[in-house]
Image (spheres, rainbow, N blue to C red):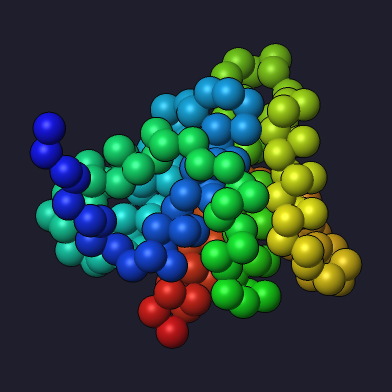
Length: 158
């Protein structure tokens, strides 16, 4: 049995990825749409080279299937900006996971995970209100995704 080499992203980036994956796992099912969304967004954030993006997506796919509890991951966040970003990303991921047109966008398990995430993040009420206002005013499609990607780029590279 060989050991897997360390990921080609930083521990801080890995923490963000794993928290988002944990939110995706909240309903007990990591949907293909969720995996694809996370891999696409994170690979574009971590490298601009298309070949490296493909390799990174393959590499990170293995980490996404590991369901690590939020309570282990959230304490690793270092700043208010990281915590706000995680709340936005967590919301984006859980609304991307409805499996049928008749299914609610956010099911009970996902809503409970979002509440747990909010508690663990311990954000000031005005920060939560800001994030939730952004979430309500945007459909979880190109607009919010592009906005989150831009925020992540500034956060990670700036």
